[in-house]
Amino acid sequence: MAQVDSRNENLKKMRDTAQQGGGPERIERQHAKGSLTARERLALLLDEGSFRELEPFVVQQHDPDKKSVLGDGVVTGYGKVDGRMIYVYAQDFTVHGGSLGEMHSRKICRVMDLAVRTGSPVVGMIDSGGARIQEGVKSLGGYAEIFRRNAQYSGVVPQISLIMGPCAGGAAYSPALTDVVIMVEKQSFMFLTGPQVIKTVTGEEVDFESLGGADVHLSISGTAHLTASNEEGAIQLCRSVLSYLPSNNVDNPPVLKNGDDANRRTVSLNKLVPTDSSMPYSMHVAIEQIVDKGTFLELQTGFARNAIVGLARLDGMSVGVIAQEPDVMAGVIDIDAADKICRMVRFCDAFNLPLITFVDSPGFLPGVEQEHRGIIRHGAKVLFAYSEATVPKISVVTRKAYGGAYVVMSSKYLGTDITYAWPSAEIAVMGAKGATNILYRKQISQADDPTVERARLEAEYIERYLTPYAAANAGYIDDVIEPADTRARLIDALYAIKDKYMPTTARKHGNMPV
Image (tube, rainbow, N blue to C red; front, side):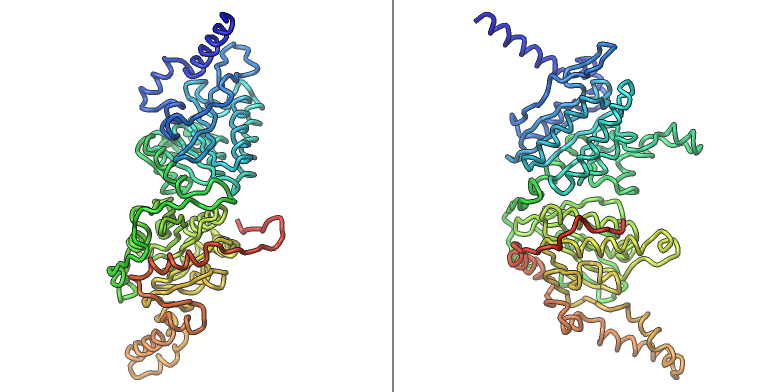
């Protein structure tokens, strides 16, 4: 019995040692800079008492300096979020600065493999100084193993990256391959080459925050999907994102009703769109009024603000929302907006979230710079994504839907299941002014009063072509609806097509114009 007690006591000591990470002094240093430890972060993310650690006794295998620490700088395991199983890893900055070595990498890969085998989401908390230099090529190989799994498991289970501190060099590729990236403001940063290297090579001087901080990646690069002012907020955002998503690609998304009436009418929407088509309005207002109250979680808010993407619920059902924002650049689609929309469409299609698209775009952004940077190729991504998506697709044309922008934004031609239009919708090749100048240039120039003749012809064009009824007459709009009824009509349509089945042509994969 004494021998058994001794073994149990030894186990307890080993576990206590493993849970101390780099030791009390380094934990205190972590707290002093306003950061939590890996285990504290996991405690905030997971339901209380649900975490089960895997491989806590793993150590660096080749350690000539005898500085190996139990766990090797990463805490891995599984637990529950709102009662659903997820797999997690959290890099421990108190151990070798969270640097990645061979065993560190193996632990992360093991968790990712188990997640896919069990059909569970993966959440990674990244806080690392990068590759462990003293392990050489083994560290690089460890990163490559993680990257390969990020790519192969993409679209199989949701992958979410929480950037809690530094993520520099090749390490940044892992979060970039995941579905959602969440960063902490003024604390986390990502870049491939640091300020010193940039200064040496290009002569440019820049600090960590200006180079790869949370605001940069949310507003300029588009790499971050969400940011929070502190770690607690970032972790709560992660829990929120998970609440919209299924556990894997063959599950249905969760249904969470909040008591909002499915038949709620919003009469104010009837006056949202100005009668003057050149006047802006906020599509955010429309979205917030139509979806379940308080459920719209916008992604990439600062990047390509002329497009809106996010997650929401309609009568408790998770949906992906895509729209133009007429209040920014008139809702025109440029290269960044096209990329933003395309990624969201593919994300939703991978995880069985129906797509709700609100259309108000005068077209693609014209200009030499956009053409030379490949607006054709980037616009084709949107076309490809919508055409390839097999989830239920519903679109609502609220105002302008001109030319190619109308076609690519979930038009009926691309396989959208149900298409609605508001009475204010304008569906045509182009607006009245441009069309009349092309169609009736000679007639206008020969008129006694060209200004009056142009106005008359524009009014005639609007009445004949710029109404939703022309498209409805041709069968490309299913119904023209009162804006106040949009919520109820979308919910009815979702119930009608939620069990949609769409077989696809056998192939390895398409060749998307990336």
